[in-house]
Image (cartoon, rainbow, N blue to C red; front, top):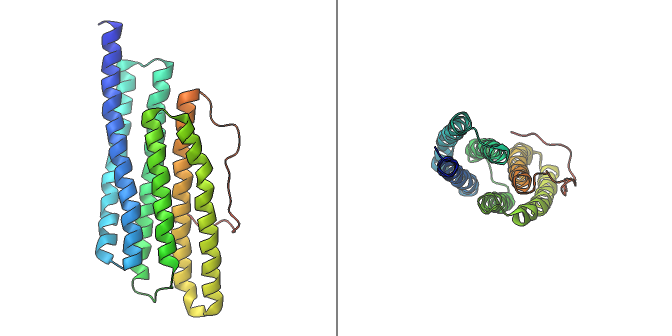
Length: 235
């Protein structure tokens, strides 16, 4: 088999895997937005759909990993191509974790639907959700385009999510101090906000993998991080 034939076969395999990654990314983005909508509208049916949909995200990660393992075994890719395959696996792992956060958001929204709503907080969370899904989209677009500049832009913009989280945290503290009955729903909302903030971290991790793929080096500088709260729970 000629070298050009081998390369074209690898390229076809990679395109197929990349299509799976983009499908997975689309499902994750939709899950985050739908979960945030379910929280704001108190729609338990939508929340349940998000929870059930996490299985499809997990299945795609498994399929991507299996396809990557097959490509490594059959194509024996050169160093640069191997880096691409390993990057895909890391991106899929980050997306899978984001799907878990969306599922957790949906679960807590079902609990909150039975409680008195705190004014303004769910709208703030929905705006955070929109921001992190945009970061995820741009990180994946940067991967497909091999655009290190866009990937670095994603890294820098993550601080906007951190700022939104900090503002919401202070808002929730105010609600809790005003009325002890607000403590339980405010704590649930804090868990949710922290989950969304972590999605931003995973979008940044995807962007850093893109930079590594393009340049051969991970970013040397620490990314901007603006968290003025104590370390919060992850789920």
